Length: 470
Ligand code: NAD
Image (cartoon, rainbow, N blue to C red):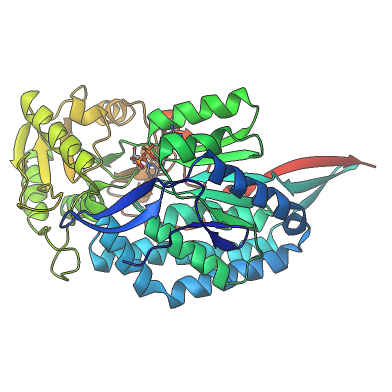
C-alpha cells in the first residue's frame, strides 16, 4: 500500500521531526502493509502554527468560495472512490462492497451537504437592535477513530472548513493511510496551504499534544468514552471549546404489533455491518416476552447469512475486527457473557479462521439488563437479545445504561413508535427502519458525548457569536 513518509503541513508533505514509525497491519491476514511516521509534539506544533497562519485568510474568504472548494474536495473523493475503498478495506478490514457504499459513499454525501450548506448558511442574524455575527471559532484540533476512517474525518473537516476554521487532524493509529489519501484530496482540490494539516501519530503522544496545544481553539474528538473524559478535562482546564462523540450501547426496541421478521433482520444487519464496530450499533435487541423465542430463532437464522472471510471477496459479508487488541477484547466479552449465564444461540469466543482477527457472528439470548454484555460497549459482531414484560419495562431497560447515542423503535404504526422514542434518553432514534440522514444531528445524550455532528447543527459547532448593538 502507498504511504507518505511525512506529515501534510502548510500545503506540503514534510519529513517528521522524529524517527518513530507506526506499522499499518491488514487485519484480515495480519500482514504489515505500510509504515507511517509517528508524529511528536514538535510535528503537532508545526501543524498548529501552519493552521494559525492560514486562519485569517480562510476566515475572511467568502462562504460561497469556501463552499465551492468543499465541492471540489467532494469531486476528488468521488473520482478516487475505489482507491480509497480498497485502502479502507486493507487497513480496517471492512468488506469491499461496504467500504465503497458506506465507508466512502457516506462521506461523499456529507461533503456534498456542506458544499451546499456552506454557501447558503446564514452567518449573520438580526435580533431586535442587534446584529449577531456567527464567526469561526479558530483552529480546530480533530482527533478521529478507525471505525469509519474517512467519514469521521469528513464529518469534522467539512463543517469546520465551511465555518471558516482551519484544521489539524490526528487520525487513528490503525487507519492512517485513508487519512493520507484525504490529505492528497484536499491538496488536489486546491484548498489553500495550511487550511488543513495532517499529523499521523499515537494518541498518547500526538493526540495528547494536539488536545493540549494552546494554539488550538476547539478540540473535536471521536473515540472512546475513557479518552473523551481526559480530553474534556484538558480542554476544560484551558477554557477551550470541546466536542466529544463517544461510545454507545444502543437499544433496538421491538414493540408488539411490529413486523417482527423485518425488525429482527434489519437489527441484525445493523450490528453485523462493519463487524459491529459502529458507535451507534443496535447491540441490545428488546423483545416482548410473548414473541421472544420467535425473535431469537429469527436472529440466529439471520446471522447465518453473514459469512466471514477475505474482505475483498464479494461473498464475504463480515470482515475481521480492526486489530489484535480488539480481537482479544471482543472474544473476552463473549466469554464473559457465557460466564454470566447468557444463552449462546450463535457464534462464540473461538476464532473462526486461523489467520486474521475474525470473530464469529454471535447472538446471546436470556440476557439480563445488568449483565456486562448488556452494559458495556463491545465493538464487535455481538448481539444481545433481552426480553421485556411491558412498555415501561422496555423503556427502563432501553434507558438503563450510561450511554445514549443511537436507538430504534419498531411498532405497528409510526405514532406508537414516536411516542416511545420521545421517552428514550438518546440522540438518534430510527423509526420502523428509518434510514441514515446526512443532515440530521448526530451525537450523544449522557456519556455518549457533547455536541453534534452533521448538517446545520454540525456546522454551528464550529461557530461563535458576536453581537453588535445598534
Ligand atoms: P480511542 O479513544 O482509543 O481513540 C480515538 C482517537 O483518540 C485515536 O485517534 C487515538 O489515537 C486518540 N487518542 C487515544 N488516546 C489519546 C489521548 N490520551 N489523547 C488524545 N488522543 C488520544 O478509540 P478507538 O479505539 O480508536 O475507537 C473506538 C471507540 O470510539 C469506541 O468506543 C466507539 O464507540 C467510539 N466511537 C464513537 C463514535 C461517535 O460518533 N460517537 C464514532 C466512532 C467511534
